[in-house]
Structure formats: structure tokens, C-alpha cells
Length: 361
Image 1 (cartoon, rainbow, N blue to C red):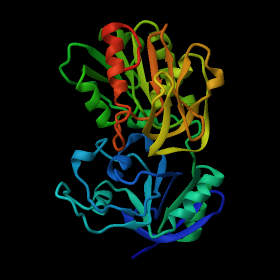
Image 2: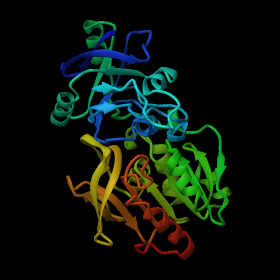
Image 3: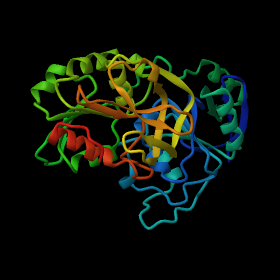
């Protein structure tokens, strides 16, 4: 096995072994975050919202059921790398077509294995998500790369992951235009079950959306800092009030900004499939899948109200404006991977389009 070193920008160092793809320069850089999901590693790795980040899995054994193209959330991974305690070399599942390491090599994605991921997680929880580097080039080279590494602050990463072409899915009687800020396949699937769906690039203008004559507009998940996306926010300001809108994750943050609110960066983000959320309209508690580093500042909401709250830390998890016929959630109701507690939100969107109201399901 090839020795590999991980160095965070604050100097914290971890020793392990290289796996997956070996980059020619000998290292990879990114913002290090941890994910607490117990399964669904392929869906996590292929979630475009992780662009610019290195994913550290807190669950110790990863890769035991292999991979299959059926579980991809995008055509390729957009994250910068993965960190795993124990990478399984055996794929024990009838659906699998390859091992996880084979998948990483095919997609040229570097991995670091064999480190104490508990220690890394505790460090990130204490000091927040940190830029850094890992690789086999030698500790001095990796340490220098870590000093040059960037976080996601101020970065527009949406342009990198968004589709270049318009595409359609579904055959429903209602037409929804979905902005692709980094849309997941499961999200497209859930929408296409209910609507005739047109997915458009993130750079699409308000006039281009109106020309498609949608019954509703959907705002997808995506990577990076919502504060760096002035273009999409400007488009949403033109669309709000003219058509019903539903946003998820980055789409939630952009809708909130367009409604006059501000966002901020969480210390280490929410990444996992076990976050409890309180739906204030029904009183129900949902266990949700989440993947975000930024959140909406509830105190700045003037044209919407908070609809959902994270029970772990009180973070705003949803907003609603009945007057403007729009709502959004910070978490992932499509759940790829994760629990299906919140999939009713897609039905709520359909109810808004069919009946013009936002009543709880």
C-alpha cells in the first residue's frame, strides 16, 4: 500500500494509505466535511452539492455492497476526494457491478483510507470545515498544498455542475421548469413522477423560463456559497409572485435571498441522513437527509415565515410565503440516500400547482 498524508490548513495531520485514483501531482485539495450516513455512500459521493469538498465518512466500513450505476445521483462525482476508515475490497450485493475502489479509479477520484476518522470528525466539529489536502506526494508537499487550498466561501461552483443543455422528463399534465444548480437524479425522478419536467441550465433567464410557460418552477440543490450567485437570485426576483416556486437546499437559500433574507456559513454544516426537523405547520417531526454548509438567517426574513426548524441546533430548515406562492426546505425530501419522511413536500408542490394553496398534507 502507498502511504498517504492528510493535512488541514490549521496544521492538523493524519497518516494513512492511498486508494482509488492517484493524481499525477500527488495530492488533491478541497474543503473537508464529514458525513454521518450509515449507508448510501455512492449516492453521497455522486451528489453534485459536494463540488469543491472532500467527504470524510464517519461510518467506519464503507464499500461493502459495491456500486451500481442505478445508484448514481449524477453522471460523475464532483467532490474532490473521499476519506474512509476501512474501504471494503469485497462487494457483497447482487446489484453491484464493481467495487467502490474500482468506481473511484474509473472516475479518477482520490481516496485516503486507514486514518482515524473519529479524530478527524472531532477536529472538524471543534474547528469547523477546513480547507486542506491529502496525497502520496510526501508530507511537506501536501502541507504546502494545504496552505494554498480554498474553502467554498465566495465561490460560484454551480456553473461547473449545471447542465449545458435543456432536457425533459415525465409526461404529467402540469409543466414544471427545474433550474439545475446541481440537481440529483432522485430529485428529477420524484418530479417526473408528478409533472412534465423541463430541466434548464442555472444561467437560464426569467424571460426564457416564461417562454416555456410553466405551471411551476423548481429550484434544485447545488454546491458552493449562495451569496456568490447574484445571477440566479436576480432571475428569481423577476419570477417570484408570477409563478409557484419550490426550492430545495441551495434552491431554498437562493429563494430566501431573493425574498430579502441573508445566509451565513455553518461551522461544519449538516451532512447525513439522520437530522430531526420540526414541521411547524403540522407539528410532525421528520428524520431528514441533509447536505449543506450554508443556512438562512431567520432573523432577516421579512417576506416569508419559517416553516421548518432543525431540532439539533435550531437552524432554519424551511420557509413559506403564501402570498407569493412559494416555499422551500433546506433538507432533501427526495432522500437519496435517506429516510422518506419528507417526500410529502413534492405532493405539497403539486397541490400548490393544482389548487393554488399551500395547505399541509
